[in-house]
Image (cartoon, rainbow, N blue to C red; front, top):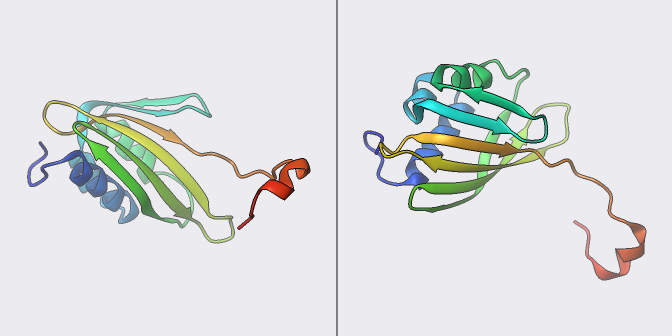
Length: 129
């Protein structure tokens, strides 16, 4: 496991806290050397610790994020995050993580679903918030 961290929950929490705090050394400490980061909607893939750190460090704009859900078991974890950027609607990100034998993030799949208006013909079945 990553020094001072004992579970996938700890490692993934440290990853997101590092990203939100722009502590790129802390982010890098959670990543395997050969980490693979996928963004399925855009079909982007980043390979390697330096690339993943740089991808996050160069993400444009003034933004913050917070974990809203974290489920972890063994060497896997899943999160939802709230992503806030001034002038833009809040966004929800969904990420899946797999750790390697050293307890570092070996693979991350990051999903960014777009909100949409539901069909009007089911309005009688739901409560909107």
